Length: 215
Image 1: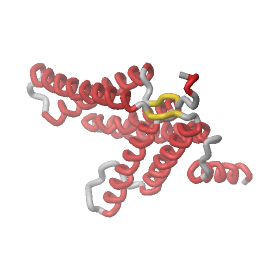
Image 2: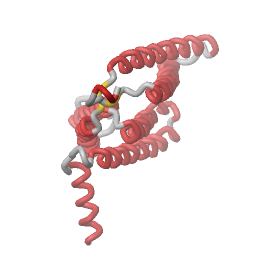
Image 3: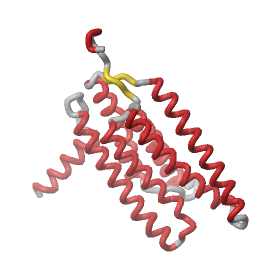
Image 4: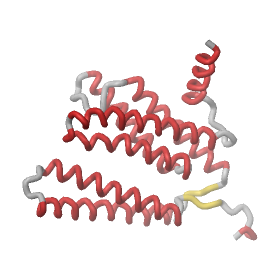
């Protein structure tokens, strides 16, 4: 019984505990583990579905996104990643509610509880990253944000167009929907790789210099 109460307290703290500059990093590590869990569960579920119907392999990207985002959240404490995860969580929640209400077909599942948990994780990720960056006196390096974003989007578009064009030549009988999904998956992998390498050398934040002699 005590183990159950401890687990309940840990889950409650994870979802609704206070976020302070002192515990922001610990909170982000916990949230990253949460996103890892969601990603693995998603891959496990859709892996089984894809096993029975390989045409649905594109749905595996949701789990992959959660795993990659969890890594960025813990390793980079990135506010941009936290905001994107919140947007993703909002889309998941809206889709789940609409599917539950019968307004749309079952795209993405009807699990309202999981959707709410993901939404809370997205919101707490934003709060924790902003608390952490304020505590460490980091400021957004907007010049890095703008040019890296431009490079990554350009790389994605060029890769997508190139892959679809190549597939149309070597696989002319392939349906447009399938070639488009392959193009998106491959271009997204390239864009994530480019983003990882570029932000490692040119992070989206820089230390705030309090005194001129620190320059």
